[in-house]
Image (cartoon, rainbow, N blue to C red; front, side, top):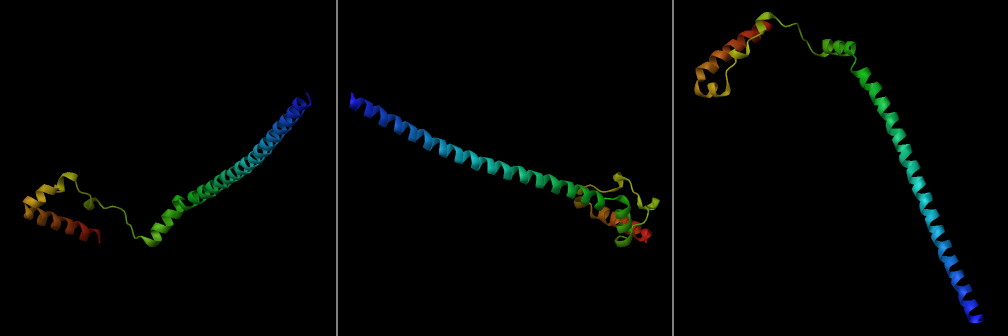
Length: 119
């Protein structure tokens, strides 16, 4: 009977050691996952903050008054004159240009006139 009690005691000790080791490993893994989750949440907060900053920058850069001032400063655009507007049907189709080079020359002369009238 003493051998049975000893075997049961050893078995319980081994079960306790296995459960304790498993609990230690499991606790350590949970802590690592919690740290990883905290880091991911911090990254999400940083990304949200960056998005808000970028949206503010975009709204400032896309301000119509600012764009108008920059366009006036760097691009000399004037209002469209009526003689610059042509109908879509006046443009030659791609196949027509290859088959009839005179049409291309005629249209290019018309386009040159439009360009010169712009100035």
